[in-house]
Image 1 (cartoon, rainbow, N blue to C red):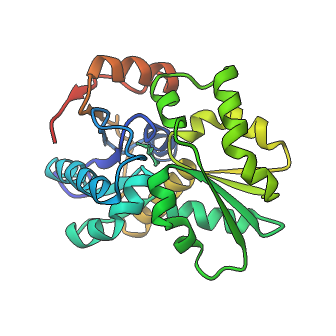
Image 2 (image 1 turned 135 degrees about the vertical axis):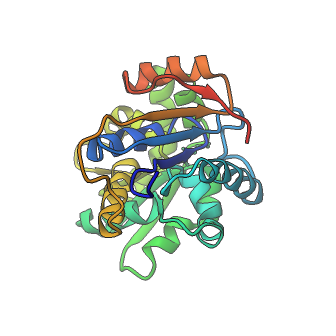
Length: 265
Ligand code: DGL
């Protein structure tokens, strides 16, 4: 297999990265993908940065062993802990979620008040502060510890999740952010409730959509895209229960999640 014909590897701690995978499939329908969700060890958000780094590199190693042509770290938490190490470790293009989302937020804000809602580990790493660098904006960060558990349980609407969102997002409303980065790839699945709580005047930036655009741009620039139409092969791997992954994946994401297999990393 030539490098161009190799699949794109996509990694997340669980289901959330499927929001990136779906966006990648929309933009790059000819490309084979191998998705790996570390559902046996999700959530990563409450773990230490060192542990998230270790788990992330184990999962990326597993994708590299499958001969991928590029790595998409479809996990803000994994990216904030391991992006630098990954860039040193692999001689492959690596696309992350944080830089593209921060860039889009900078281009979107009108009042220079940007918010990010993310996991505890992403907040601790200050990766979004670093990504926004010296730009003349203020960044307000809110953590949403239980959002990932709700998504992993397939619950994205209802009173409980609405009450949680109102609580978690209150500091962002108080800071009058006009642009909110969904700084976890699980959160696009909660954009109904997050958008409702923040109100119509606040623009939501999906790190998943921005990451897919960055993947398109990177692979185009490096001339790594397949040249002709192709019935793409999409492989889904989980460290957890494949039947559960497939069931929930299909319910939340539709039919493209099929033939899920279990792997150890
Ligand atoms: N989807 C992941 C992210 O983008 C993390 C979820 C977790 O495992 O806590 O940060």
